[in-house]
Structures are given as C-alpha cells and as structure tokens.
Amino acid sequence: MAKTEARKHKLIPKHKKASEKEKTAVLEQFKITVNELPSINKSDTALVGMDVEVGDMIKIERVSPTAGSTVFYRGVTSD
Image (cartoon, rainbow, N blue to C red; front, top):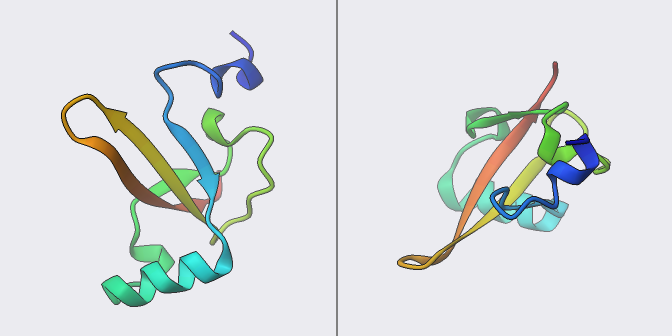
C-alpha cells in the first residue's frame, strides 16, 4: 500500500494540522509546551501530503462506538 493511500485507510484516524490559534489555546489550557505533548514523527505515514514542520501540533480525531469522537494532540518531531 502506498503512503498516500495509507492516510485513507479506515483504521487510520483523521489527522489535521492544528491552527496557531487552536495550538495556543490547547497549550495554555493544559499549561504545557508543544515539546511536552506526545510526539509524532514528521515522516509518519499519516502526515504524508500535509505541510507540517517540527514544532507543529497535530489534532487526531478517533471515532469509537462506545466513546463517540475523541481528540488527541501530538507534537511534530524530526526524523
């Protein structure tokens, strides 16, 4: 399976680059820095085709039949 096709796989949750406004709000809410977030590598298959840089924040939305929709955040790190 090609990397671009992997993002469309039904088992890979939706990944989206958080806006600067959203990033600031989340970091202030939890009183943390982007380096304290769990990390996701810039070369991760789920980020292919996205214009991400080290230090960006990724919003991951997972859908569950029991929990509904859950949001997770990851900080982008280098290779």
